[in-house]
Image (cartoon, rainbow, N blue to C red; front, top):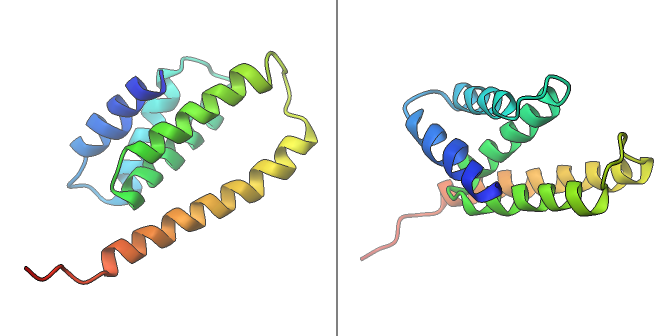
Length: 121
């Protein structure tokens, strides 16, 4: 599912909105991703993940980091958490700093990529 959904949302939809402002593109893709998962109670977390995946795609200029992140998210949900209704405290303790570091590194990579000089032929 991660590959198909990334091709659909961060590939086709995000690319189709290329002329729009970044925040508008991220918002549209996030809302569409949340609605696509057809769960009222999971809409906000799913839309939030959709926004993060859209930012990762924009910042890196590649869909592959979003595919890997999405696949890891699905694997954690399926194999680690199983049918738990609520995340344990340790998961937040590990996930939030990890998320902050990952977003910072993606943001920094995007700045480095846009500021590097053009290659000389």
